[in-house]
Length: 133
Image 1 (cartoon, one colour):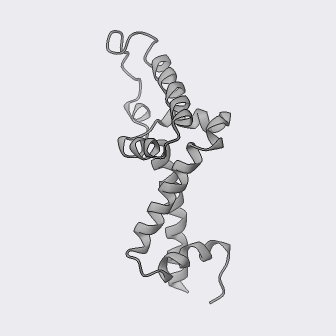
Image 2 (cartoon, rainbow, N blue to C red; image 1 turned 135 degrees about the vertical axis):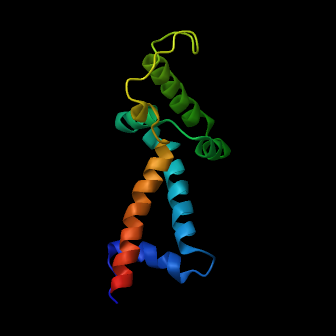
């Protein structure tokens, strides 16, 4: 079967006999997303806005801290905390909390989780397309 630009990456995971290829794809996407946010992308305004909106789950925050890139993580978390303070009304946390208008909007996913989910959807679509052929 002729490989295209989408299938090369996916087929590499299936050729390697190191365990579950789907888990391998997920781990690779997590690694790339964390490298992305702790790299030069953290200074890009559009990336910063997205990371401020979504924040980070405990699992991915821990992985970011393990990368030993303290300045990018500190700057990213500082702007995220300022965004949270602005959303909560600017008061001391816990003293003047406003109830969010829409609970679904206030429970945004983690920035890394969102990128991994986006990538997995596309890679799984490629897996299914290749399986059909």
